[in-house]
Image: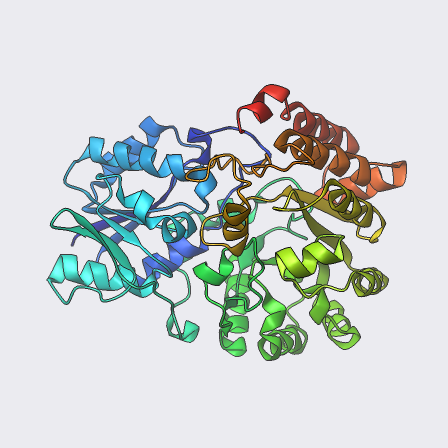
Length: 477
């Protein structure tokens, strides 16, 4: 039987910054494995989770002796490690066929295929693409019609992007292929998104988002049409994982789970009916779709916290630049309602948009401080390929390098007559620090959300500030 390795490269091969490295859920690799394990023998290598060196990664490849290797890279921020991994694979055996996938590959497939070590790139959702490709490679069946990028007669050929229309046609991930106990007893990173209890699971029941916010790639990655699983089957999987692995809490990682309202409501009802007794947090939540009735049901089902994406404290930026239907006064009321139900509330904000004035940036910082959220996260605007924001930035001529901007997402990458990239990068870190740690009460609350003591929290605060050196910022622009 032919052999396939599915792998996550180690993000530390590029940088060791704790603020931008996080463990990825093994669910996608285990789902892909479940799709193809009748065709090939599958091994999973998670070089990041186990912090493998390049030599250790190569050693495991040599021991596994695969015919094919699938590499998944989540974001373009870590584009370099795809090339590093591909080179390492070919060094172990130049005849191995390399298949690249993930968000970065979907968005930057032409750039990816410039690396001749990579034989195929999966453009879009890869479950059926990988299966069809392996059937072609192993059994010489029909070549896939969608979702692949490859070379023919020296030219890069890009097929249409693949989407899975029926999520219920997919199997459950096969966690028996990994040491699942290692993952479910260790949080992805220190911070407010920590699991409510261990062992825990990261899971999504939906794909897609219709809002098309200007900075977001989800519209391209997952489509505007929201697709969802059968809620009963979704809950049955959770019951199985609870019985098999002792799962006690859930982190929902859907792009926008409340958009599939019937699915979401039914899932909440089944949490209650089946007496799952599993706490959960929701990592992405459209605050403008929240109602008192929905919030009541969430709290009853076991929700302990939500992350709401407000993005800006300025109406013009929300409407004309981001294109997000958030009413700032209503959002403050909703945050208050969330907290009155006993849930914690995290809030996301972005500064440094193309055409944004310094006064508008300061409005967002002020709103982040007064909105009432337990914890605020402040990001800099990154004009990613495939987004409307990048189109706006190109049109306004505010990219330092229009062809290939640096993609270290800690630092601002847009220029302005009113502010510099350095201004925004420094402001982001120091206002995050000021707002979240402004009083003994705030510091205590933040430590609780992070799940660490205040001494450990202070260490992370200092490391975050120390990472923001003038030299590192200057290197980005």
